[in-house]
Amino acid sequence: MNKKDRILHLFLPITLAVLFALMAGAVVFPRPQKQERRPDVQIISDWDMEGQALCLPCGIRGLGARSRITLCTTIFPEDGDHLYLKSVYTAVKVYADGELIYQYGEPGSYPAFLLDPPTRVALFPLPENGGGKVTLQMEYLAPSQRNTAMLHPPLMGSSGDLYAHLFSRMGFSLFFSIVLIALGMILCLIAFVLTRFEKSGIAFFWLGLFSLCTGIWVLGECNLTGLFIPNPSLLYVMAFLGLFIMAVPMMKFGLVVLRLSPSHPLHHMCLTMELVLGLTVLLQLSGIVSLSKSMYLFHVLTPLAFCLFAGSIIREIVRNQNPLARKFFLPVAIIALFSLLEVGNYYLFHLEVQKSFFFQIGVLFFLLIMSALCGYFIRDTFALRSRNRQLSYELSLIEKQVEVQRQRHQLLSAATAQIRQQRHDLKHHFAVIRSYLNNREDTKLSLYLDHLCANIPEEPFPALCENEAVNAVALHYLSMAREAGISACHIRLDIPRDTGCVVESDLCVIIGNLLENAVDSCRAVEDPFIRMQSRLAGGILTITMDNSCLIKDTSPGQAFPSTKPSGGTGLASIRSVAGKYKGGFRFEVRDHVFLSSVYLRWSE
Image (cartoon, rainbow, N blue to C red; front, side, top):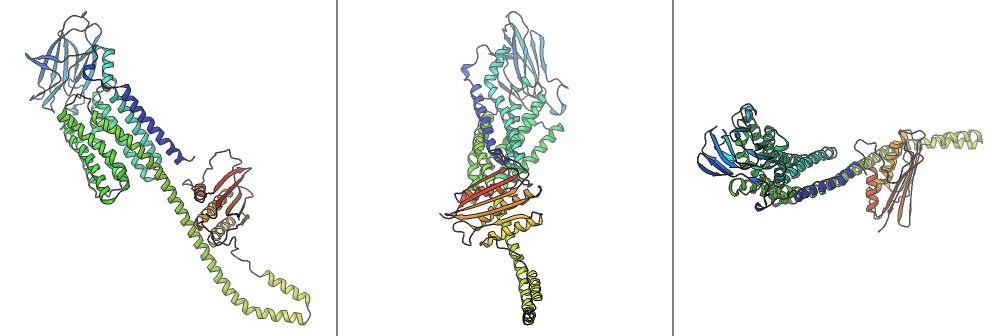
């Protein structure tokens, strides 16, 4: 099995294994209903803000930058209880009975260009007081880049119960993001291998980059990640850049698979996204506008890009009858729809689900369908490439036939001129012969005749078979063998002028490939030889050839390595032609001799 076949056979199992892991993750990390919340974890939602009751989660609007927000409540923690807290672009301090137990977001604790403290989740212990009452106070500083401070309710319980609760709600997102990153890396690796054989393999790179960016976004967005990667700045960059970038490789993927022109609207949309992306990063680094504020622009651009991609596919189906567009319409339409649902939930529905939940579902369906399509794409690409290489080889054989015929025409023209000269000289030879006969000079006559016979030119192009096309190909490689110093090259073919149901070019492919491989194999051995013959009997044409080679023996099923830079298609082409005419083939090596045999059915 060659490298291309191994890629094709490994791609689908790997992808199916990854997707099976996704489905398993959905089972391992189910999303419980609201009433199924663990009783061992308490949600502290009731608070007092300056004498007014406040229920979290909520957003407090109309605040100035760095405005102070103070919340108070009473809790009854047990010994060993912890507090889980999420702060969104706000600095926060937590006091228990007036004692500072946690703080985050002080100036200098995060890069200055971020403008506001990035979102952080933290799990920290509460002071032990034997189960008594504790006054809990939280002080927030409103963000400078938003006019709304989003406050989330803390969770209280033992560390084990809190982890279990968080995993039950967000474990799938964490697992899903890791799988997406792994799948993206696998697709990029496959693209690296495929592009060595086929330029269109770059489509897998863009698809892999999309999966990688989506996984990085979900990983950075998942609250559970912050408990394992205590670096809010890194997660902030991962979340927003993953979100901002992911539409670009998706559009690049569409441009490749649909073969769209540079003037297509999807190409302009891709350039626009790249320019806006560069501008947002520049604004963040310069401390002017944060990524969290630029997010609202990408909430419009990203779904628009997916919808434009889906619209481009519809246009290709209707206007150009593009068969690839029909295949890719369903997965792209799904991801466009779920991206709209994600934005709709963020601004309108406000369902109690993990952020990016809808988009994760869309990506899951997208990958399920795209995995099957990509497997077929690889298979069809390799089949088309193999066919193109075979057609290219057949074209080269035709060119060689034309060259042999041209050489034959030149020699025949030279022979015709030589015959004219010989006719002129023939009467002189007859006169000399008659003179020797009349004078009964038998010895001189015999020597003269020997001299004439020795000067009779040999036929420059011996007939190796009746079929002119096959004969021309065989003569070409016979001449190549002699130039390579292979004197022991014997070819005897029983191939008539009328080839019946077998196409002449297919016969040329078999004869040409066998002889080409034999000549290449003989160049590296001492005392090389080539013996080829064919026999037509009972409606079956059998072609056999033996030639010397470096390999001593082969085991059953062993592949024969090609010495050509491109990998070669010789034996594969022979197998293809043999199968076309319900025939068979066999290749093996015994004691440094390559044994080839091919048979074809000559008539239906």
